[in-house]
Length: 92
Image (tube, rainbow, N blue to C red; front, side, top):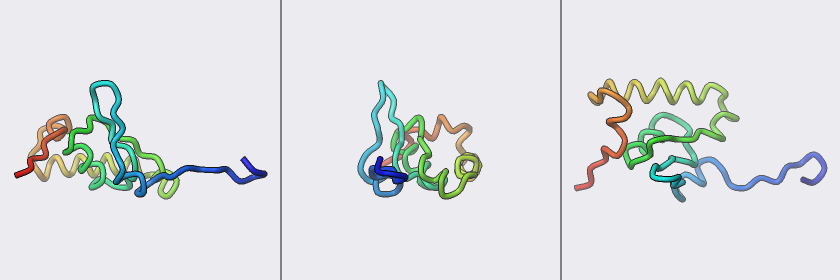
C-alpha cells in the first residue's frame, strides 16, 4: 500500500473468462458475476456456488438482484429448484 492507494489485482469481468475456482469436490463460480445471467452461466456449467465481489461495489444490491434473477430463471425455465440447474448445460 502506497499512501492512501491500495494495490489491487484483476477483478470483475476480466477474471470471469479465466476460470472458475475449484474447491474440494464442488465448483465455485468466481470472477465477473455482475448479474443473474452471469450467475446462470456458471451454474449451468456446474458451479454449485457463486461469488459476487466487484458487483457489490458497483451496486450494493447486486447480490439480492442476482438471487431474484436466479429465482425468475428457474420459474421461466421450469426448474423446480436451483439445485436442478447445477450442471444442466447440454452441449450438442
